[in-house]
Length: 97
Image (cartoon, rainbow, N blue to C red; front, side, top):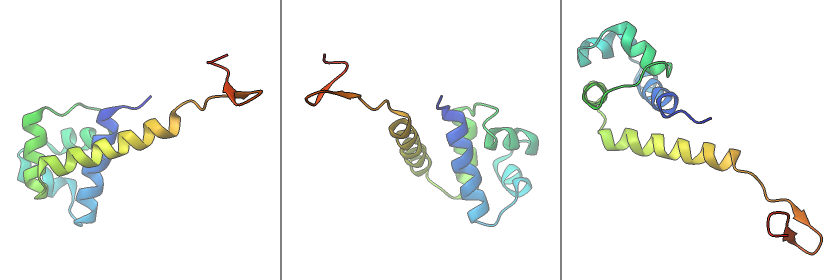
């Protein structure tokens, strides 16, 4: 199952680590607790829109950029887990038979 909070957490963690910044730095800049930010990055907590906006500001990233990356990841995961139609006989799928 694809969980939006997990994809969002991964995007935020990758942005932070790419910048070479620590959880402590981002949590201080976003005015949220270090523990809560850690839980968001691990996909354990859902971030409110206000909190997500604060984290994006702390990372110096537009919210839209973060959401586009999350949508791209979700799309990839959906495509990877999509059922493949089974071909039977003359090219007719089993579902069409």
